[in-house]
Amino acid sequence: MTARRREGAEDGSVSGRGERQRSLSLAAMETGIEVSEVHKRYGAVTALDGMTFTVKPGRVTGFVGPNGAGKSTTMRVILGLDTPQRGRALVNGEPYRRLRHPLSQVGALLDASALQPGRSARNHLLWLAHSQGHGAKRVDAMLEQVGLSQVGRRRAGGFSLGMRQRLGIAAALLCDPPVLMLDEPFNGLDPEGIVWIRGLLRGLAAEGRAVLVSSHLMSELEDAADHLLVVGRGRVLADTPVSALITAASRGRILVRTTEREAVMEILAGDGATVAVTGTDVVTVTGLAAARITELLNAAAIPFSEVATYRAGLETAYMELTREAVEFHAEPTEAKR
Image (cartoon, rainbow, N blue to C red; front, top):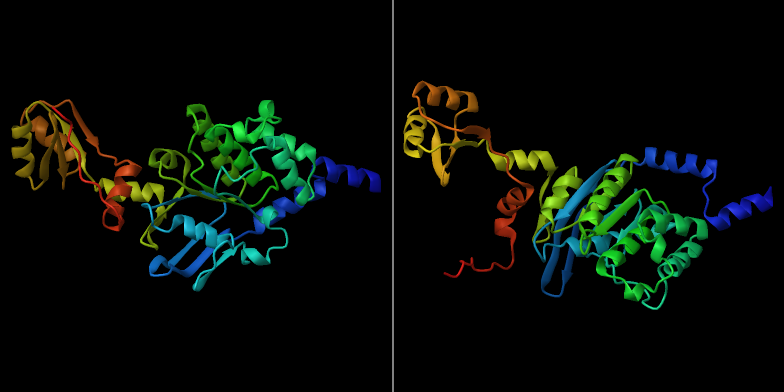
């Protein structure tokens, strides 16, 4: 019996008892990450100014903001790499430095280049695995999961950015943690890789894990995230479901496609709507429901090809929300003629 238990520990297999313990751990986790009134200064520069939020289990939380908003500093504070002047950051109810087995509590990818370039991908993971009591079987399973099993014995220094991202994700998942923090995980991935990581993130959240993802790629977060934390100048600007932010940015606008813009504008404005031209054959209407617009246009015999509810993209919603929080603005550019 003792020999069999030792063999299981060496090859990285998970016993039935281990599976039950992990399931209980995930089920009991009420708050994955809690950041409360965190203030951090670097000399005269304020990086975090009362940063406060919670990352709950069972969902993917996007973490977005302009450059210099405090995202990376916040992640470093959560992981105990930076010490704030005030406030606290907890992982499953404890400061990171007090976690007995931190890699089994939170997996993190902050910098895909943080590896030994002369070491193979497999040896990189084996080094981490052995430090946490896992063996080769777990490493090989992770290489398979992230699509690197065929190149696991190649030196990581020769990997592309996308391959290094996959290796970093494998390292974050290695000890099966209930909390995950990934900084720009979409960077360098090809289209297949982006589809893969979307599914991975959603699957991890569905298992009950708390997943925090920092990214500048709004289109990918729109498809992958359930919740969004928007930060600017070291503070939280919005803490909201993705769908609610998009709905708010859409502002009840209706798009009407027609070749008779002036006639449409006149009759709808006469019924109290606010109407603006937003395209060659498109007007945007607020203040009237789509059914009422259709009724008015049909009654006036004004031709139109479409009446549709406008849905803002996450990028549009984000840009509107952070317009005043961007530290550096570039001048708008015009195409050369």
